[in-house]
Amino acid sequence: MSQAPATGESALTPAVKAVIGASATKIEASLPWGIEREGLRIFTQAIMDPDPRYWDDEFAKTTKFGGIVTPPIYCTYLGRRTRPGSEDPVTRAFAENPNSDGIGGVRDADEGPGSLPKVPTHLKRILNAGNEIEVRQYPKLGDRVFSQAKYSDIKERVGKDGSRMLIVTTENIYTNQNGEVLCILRASTIRR
Amino acid sequence: MTTAQELKDKKQTYYDDVAVGHQFPPLIIGPMTPTHLFRWSAAIENWHRIHYDQSFAIYHEGLPNILAQGSWKQSILPRYLKDICLPDGWPWKVTFQHRAMIVPGDTLTVWATVTKKYEEEGLGFIDCDVGIRLQYDTETCPGKATIVLPIRNGKAIPYPFVPPKKLAS
Image (cartoon, rainbow over all chains, first blue to last red; front, side, top):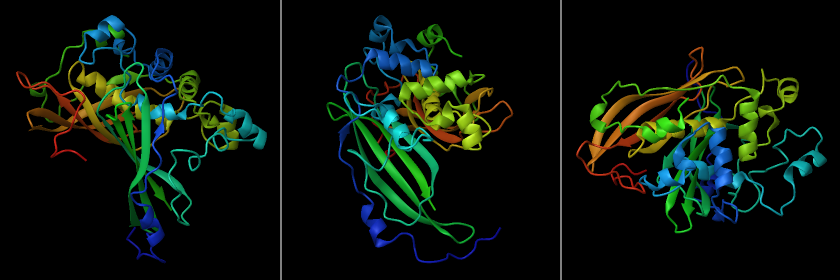
């Protein structure tokens, strides 16, 4: 199929350009007690990784890390957990919609602390375009983990049918209580 | 699957040991079951029903079965690269895309093949093609990775890892 000429106005409007570089509020991704053994056990068993660096104190002390650490991108999952004392999101979701898919009403990515402003575009369909993960350091037991998101880039692309789309790249930087970078997650989505 | 003892005893693979085209030992996972998928959903509190509610996945969403989570795949590749690098290398960076679906019954082969090697600031960098292949050879998570392996008699890889300025994003 040959490339059709671009149709309509550019999707990369001044309003869209204005959100490039926008940052969300830095939030604590870990629960108030930081990295702990039981959460680590549940996670590592779910990825089927029996590495003793996650549970064997004596062995972990002999490694370059000097103690128990987490898997490479463990910190990127911490923010998904329901914080103690907050409203039960599952009960709320199904109270609002008995046919809930379990996620629509449970978590809205565009709301709450740490969320980025919505990209002001009429392009509503969102597709995953790929992820990049950069690992700098593993959290240790007791560490607290913080995250901050920003729109690192938004580009326009023209599909083979001439339709315009946006490639939106979000960068989320995870740091520990000392401000040291643990992991950087760059996720790109297609808006069309 | 790798055992805890194997990971404890793992001998270092050095930068000097690999050449372009080298295939690292694959990690075989599976067959996947609904219980594996449910365990991951519970572990990270991902309540999307397409991952554990078969009736919902098939009859409401029109899917062939419940699906393995993209977030699970996303965690498997860094875990595999970490294993390759143990004990003193560093699984620095991985990029990937989500392609084919993983459903219960699938067996996965996590793999990495060296495409380039180069030294920077005295450290040995290895670029790889990586992926998670299904039992019928369909690639479900194609990507690229850069790992750092120690050079024999070379300097230690710093921890925390700080990429050389020339390679930093």
